[in-house]
Image (cartoon, rainbow, N blue to C red):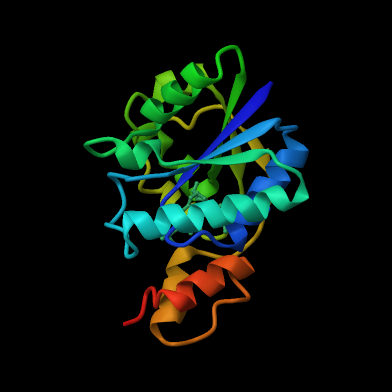
Length: 195
Ligand code: ATP
């Protein structure tokens, strides 16, 4: 079985995440996908609460599974006492699905940061890495020291970010063109990201 891991802040999940996961399912031949809500030590604190991000990630997984069930949401990282690291998540998933081939899904911006991640060499031993292009990610290249790990590169261009969704919501603008319908409804009904 081929099991993929896709971690993110999901603050909120958006159409870029959705397309990436559906592309990966087809192009990388995934049997299952773990979508993990992170407490990323490298990112600014999330705007939405952990509970809201977890709920939105569950809605996101339900959207993914409308085309046939393959994804599950994991709040394992949120339950850990401190910051969580990708290597810990991968070891957790590997223990759950022993014998599976693991694939880590990342956008190009995240990929370029991997040499700075904790135990980055252990990550590359534990899993394959599938990278999805992201406009603007090349800007991050200059700030990234170290050698980038071998990876499968997928041509991908969905210029959507959670930052842009939060910015629009804070300005009282619609976000329904950038996020799945269930997430747009959740943001609206819970007044998330309002300035
Ligand atoms: P923010 O704008 O708050 O930084 P984000 O849009 O990057 O958030 P995350 O939840 O931090 O969303 O991203 C999780 C993963 O999805 C990362 O590996 C990121 O590179 C990838 N990703 C997010 N959006 C895209 C996109 N539009 N194209 C390709 N990869 C993406």
